[in-house]
Amino acid sequence: MAELSKVAMVATMGLIAALLSPTAMSLEPSFISMVTDDAQLPDGLSYDFHAESCPNLENMVREAVQAAIAKDVGVVAGLLRILFHDCFPQGCDASLLLTGANSELKMPQNGGLRQSALDLIESIRATVHRACGPTVSCADITTLATKQAIMQSGVPGYDLPLGRKDSLAPATFQQVGILPGPDFRIDQLVKTFADRGFDKVELAALSGAHTIGKASCGSFKNRAGENADFVLRLQGLCARMPNRLQDLDVDTPNTFDHKYYKNLQAKKGVLVTDMALNNDDKTREWVNNFAGNQGWFFGTFSNTMSKLSKLQGKPVTVGEIRNNCFRVNNGKKETLDLIVAEGIVPSA
Image (cartoon, rainbow, N blue to C red; front, side, top):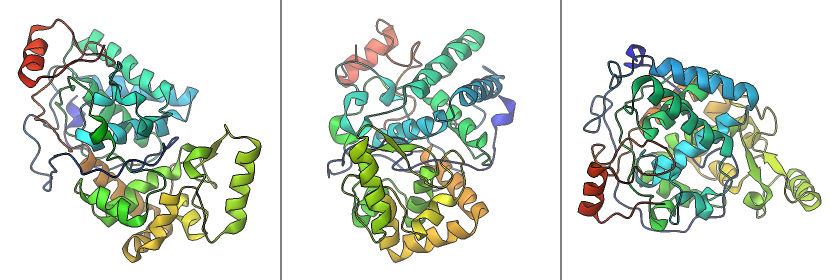
């Protein structure tokens, strides 16, 4: 993947795009390290990590994502939400993908994750491993697929370090509880993102991922705001069709653009968290900036996505490269050694 050395700019998301879940519990954050200098990457990561072992990696991911979007444009929002919900609790380690008794997929914060996007990640892994052997982790594939989905939506690329290992176990319920809920107040949002090293500008930028994707009626049942007609219309639609999915961007729901911020200015944010951005002077300033300049939004979003991809919990050298994204490599000696050493019980 020679081209993958340092690409510049793109995309994704906070509270993230599709089907947000019930309000997350207010818990103290688990330890996670943040990168403050782009020149300083977590140990084990590099921008050209797979250049020799899998030189055609980027092309394989690009083609698979392109084919998936042609069938279902919603896969872009699906990948964005998967990436955010994987990286935010304990770093980008594909722990979210694990199935089994303690799976993060069964936790309320992850309700409604798009199955077609989950399947796409595993499909890409199978293609890549057939071509290059088991050299690329599901964690790297998830970050690469999300980046490609954003780029194919019209946003420039961004720096993406590679070389992650896959987690040997899901994140805990407490770690997943850190994810912001759709009813969070602005002070809760600011603290939650600050605990992961993101400032108010980056919070406003990542929220822009809501320019695509949908939310369930349960995600905004407590919505109230200045635009009474808009809120009443949403509530009326849900009363008639409680299982419907509401576009988060009511203007251009399938286009990655800055119309989401224009909707906030018009008091037409769907979620409580969307409208909360207007309740703080600093975040409101950036809502206005991004509404007035799409390029500014894209650039800030890209830089913030690059930062999100560097969130790290355990050292990236701890873990494995899964032979199936949905389960650990049971029986593999090095995996068992790590499990015994750390007291980890793998998912079924």
